[in-house]
Image 1 (cartoon, rainbow, N blue to C red):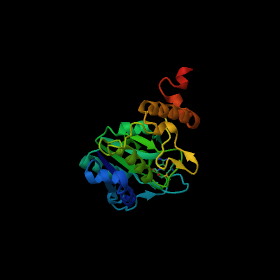
Image 2: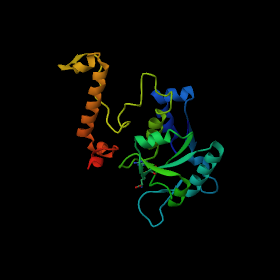
Image 3: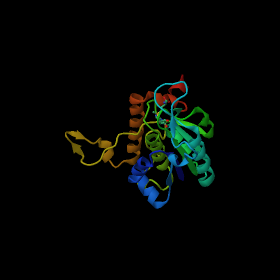
Image 4: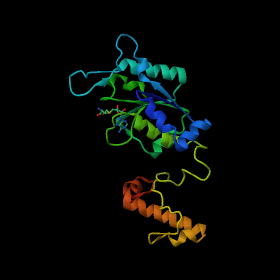
Length: 233
Ligand SMILES: C[S@@+](CC[C@H](N)C(=O)[O-])C[C@H]1O[C@@H](n2cnc3c(N)ncnc32)[C@H](O)[C@@H]1O
């Protein structure tokens, strides 16, 4: 899988993708992340990527010409099956979207800055994604969330002892509680069932825990499950 990132701060993307599971996936060639510096597309006489907003107001707006040139060039030279604008005004990003995006061979992510992009470039993108109802200073942190969450779903990226199948959100539930050694820590013991060696019992316990934890912390997830609370009327 290929990620093509259009950004003013490629060093942010580079630094974060060098680490851990994603760093290893890049080393092994299971995925690639290529940065494209938006400033390189400021041809003509104006060498700025931003300008003052028409109508006045605070901040600066990203000029349409470099954005248009960058998206056209990267799409035609590298190819991009899906072109995404990162923006707080986009569709809320979630695990189901990560799974859908993992089905593409190549994804272009555009990272905004300042007050965002000139409205007239929105049509260049296939979709707009928001990583949550808050405003970041730039799209790089948002793009990294997409790269991380999609990247770890690519077959082979997680080791054989790690799996994305029973994690939070994979079945519309939060994950069950996890424990490791020591068996007793500050007076708190690991639940007996987990040391029983009875795998059927452990599976049942985990399923119950996932369900009750989700009910307490995120009842909205249960309501969204097919046949969930809402479905039961
Ligand atoms: C300061 S924000 C601009 C916010 C814009 N003025 C607005 O109110 O919608 C600058 C850039 O950060 C990125 N960004 C900020 N918050 C984001 C979020 N929640 N999800 C995705 N991208 C975000 C976008 O690329 C955006 O263009």
